[in-house]
Image 1 (cartoon, rainbow, N blue to C red):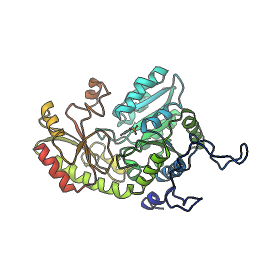
Image 2 (cartoon, rainbow, N blue to C red; image 1 turned 90 degrees about the vertical axis):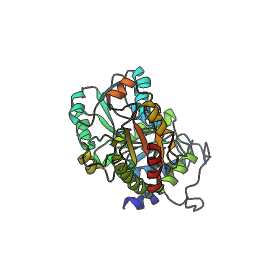
Image 3 (cartoon, rainbow, N blue to C red; image 1 turned 135 degrees about the vertical axis):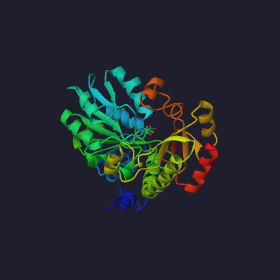
Image 4 (cartoon, rainbow, N blue to C red; image 1 turned 30 degrees about the horizontal axis):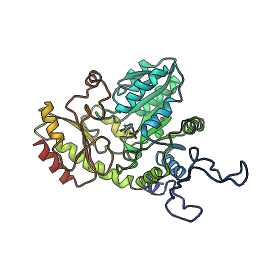
Length: 379
Ligand SMILES: *Cc1c(COP(=O)(O)O)cnc(C)c1O
């Protein structure tokens, strides 16, 4: 089955009790049992819920995985992966990643004696060099947020395999439409479903996809024991969002390409970060492992004074100034003060994330209107 068809039909069985074509929102906490221990596969809604099950089935199918689990947020999904580890274990993590993952790792999990080693994962040699006998997990994001750096997933999978560690890829920026890390050897794929999977900026949710049954059982145990599960209404919204992921991503890609090239030719723009430029260092790998380049773009102005950057950020009309990404509406964001403020300034600068960087989540409005909007704001 081709992806466009999968996106519409994945996980969607007519409801067994009524035939409803859309899986109903099963707003219930418990299920009545016929006799002690005799039930229909549902006992208590932290462990199982039919709306969540439909969504988890869909999640697995669209990432070409065997299993998937839904969580109450992307960070809850990330947190559950770290809970696979024991004190003393080491994680090799990308030095350029979502600020909230960095905060979770450094401020929460380091207190439990899990060690995180941050390296530039765009060069596999750096990752190889950081492997020790205690390495249990490699955590990468590609393209990265917000610098759009590309890491070779197959190379990471080979290093993880040799190290006897799991590879988890945060695939939020690409979405399953543009990249499928399980096909490239990753053990776990993580998404913030808040972004492209939900797609309408109306829900917070996360998910994990995997192929290994034992790993699924471990993560399911964590899901039900720690309880960071999404409610059925949120599951319904993501199920609905997934149906249009294909048409939305196509539009995000088309608009992203137009705007990235337009920005690059703008006299007041110094640098544009977008995975689809042929002269990028990571282009060959992006082309190999992605099916398109998406609608996430960052850029720097030639005049990157605080005042000018703030002026541009406050001057757009269709691009709303907000954190988050992946919705149908365009957003503009200032990573240094917003999404990535939890990363210490010197760390940020060292990794190339400047104070003046502006990040766009290009929506699916008409590209001409978006370009006109940016043109007026940049001046
Ligand atoms: C938003 C985001 C997360 C966190 O997800 P939440 O749903 O906000 O908890 C993780 N990784 C990336 C790349 C993100 O953009």
